Structure formats: C-alpha cells, structure tokens
Length: 206
Image (cartoon, rainbow, N blue to C red; front, side, top):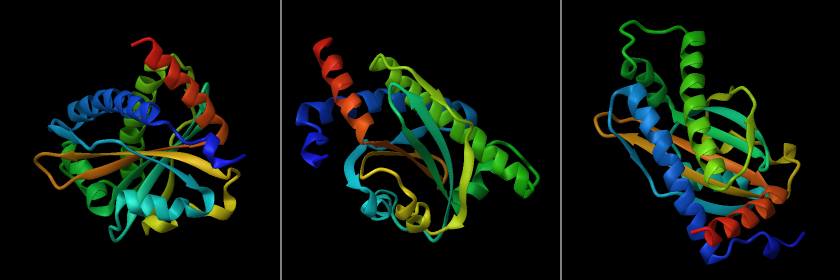
C-alpha cells in the first residue's frame, strides 16, 4: 500500500486536531480531579511514520529524558491500535506524592498507581474521540510495557506487524509541579483509512 493513500488532507488533519483537543480536554479534566492540580495540555502532534522509524518518531515527540516508564493499552473496534502513556522517572516518583500518599510505595503499588492513571487518561481520551467520530471501541487492560528505559528502546521495530502507523501525541503538565506525561496513540494502516472516512463524516456534520 502506498503511503499517499494514508496521508491526511489538511482538512482531515485539522479535524483530527480538533477532535483530539476536545477529547484530551476531557482526559485532562479527569487527571486534574485525581491530582487536585490544574493540568495544562499541549497541542496534539500528528505524524504518519514507517515502522522502521517509529522509535525515532517517539523520541522526537517525547524528547530524551534519561529514562522513562510506560504503560500500554490496546484498543479494538471501529478503530484499532495501541495507546501508550509515558512517564519520566521523576514523574513516577512524584505521582504518589501528588495523590496524597505520605509514605513511599513499594514497586507493586507504584505500578498499580501508574496503571490506574494511565487507564483514566486512555479511556477518557479515546472514548471522547470515538464518541465524536461515532465509533465504537473496546480496551484491553493496561499493562506496564517498560520500566526505567531509554525512550528509543520502548518499541522494537522488528516486532511490529504493520508498515505505517498514525502517531498522535499530547502531553500533560501540571501547573504547580514538574510533572509531565505523554499520551501517544498508534493506529496501523487499515485504521488510518477508517479514521479518514470518519473524519470526513465528522466534517460533513459540522
């Protein structure tokens, strides 16, 4: 399949940014309630990347903190793909404190906390996008995909089963603390084509 078939038109890209902004606002609102702090959102960044370049693409979007921990959650239905929530190690350490835990948590409790927050963000964001695009989604349980690794090592391109993917990134920061997490959504070729059709229908209705 030629990549030309997968490229978003300028109008489709604008519509996807608008839809993602609305959905991310819902996710940010839920995160703000959990952390009791005002959450700032970035503008969504949208790329189509080859599988061989996925690690480079993620590094460009996330930056190069010394090490990160990431949770993943697959979704299926009208659209199919993977969502990843990436935390730098300082953010991981801050999360328990932000949520009011006075004592240090052990490793298992720390991971459970990351999974809970990731589940809220992924669910709020993707369900928001699905609702706006009249799509139906179901989710796997979130899992920790990597702990304390370099960003470029999160994904092994040789294990991927697709040639191209749409990569959408938004990051959340807190006004009062040095906390940042990145939400990345990856959709393979067939879902990009489905998404393009859904975006066209969304634009026709507004």
